[in-house]
Image 1 (spheres, rainbow, N blue to C red):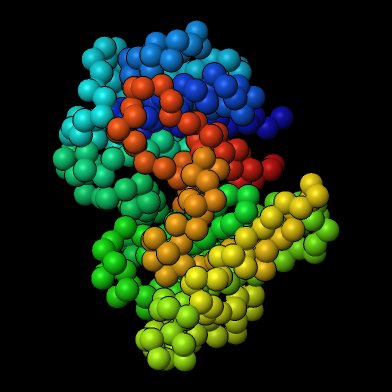
Image 2: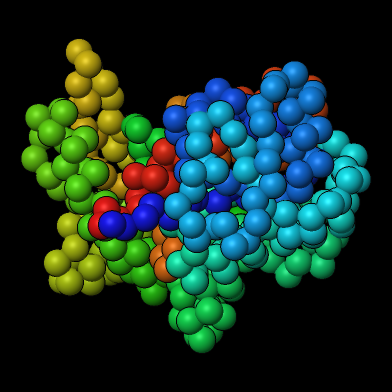
Length: 363
């Protein structure tokens, strides 16, 4: 009999809302968080539970228990694995600190290595704070780059040989980014033939891996299964035939043509101000009316993330594509301004846990 491996949820920056939304998720959605445990600091989670006035049981989890069928990961209980057990101090809420950045990064690194070794089925990451990471001396600006480095080291490859992409998704829209965390000027330079083609291939691989899920969605909407990809242009009106820039003609279109020759169902480039509306799925008469595309490739960070977040931050999930592990995350940040005030919304974290579970291969 196959035992179900658990999912690790990293606590995020302990000075932000990560611990709070984790406690809320376990208290409010016990059926969804069943089979999950938290990697982080017990004292920090206890502070969040006390602030929220919940009687949620928070129990310590030891490393030798993680590979055992998780009877201790039942609904109504939050199990936490501590890398430094017995820590009683907590971090000042809403303040950037090297100590908080290091604690957050350490949790991510432990979970990534556990996932790569097959000890856990997936990891869900609460938000990090980039300045706190930098203060802690972490040489990566966020989760995606950190996880890429861990995967490359595990596989014995260079980071260049483990290409990853960021996808933001909800029930209405999926977007995959050609570039992630860099300045807009650098992001434009990153729109190269190789990067666009690589993004199309990585997106294709993800859609093939989740084909059963796509079939399920389409069946509810009475559509046939498909895994087609739409590509956004870089310039206004996708360059308008070269009048507003020639990246579409010189770079993006040739990359799409090459992908099509490989048998990938991809089209574009289309005007960035309309492609997301065309791709959006909608619920009509209790059925899903599928959009034109199963995923949209965006040329840079804000171009792709604004449309998904506008549809509702509480429903968005960040998925890292290209890794030899499953990683999802809420689509919001640490929200230092509201940390400790009790009204952070756990919906995006709950959605991320559900997404992670849906991506775990069924044995």
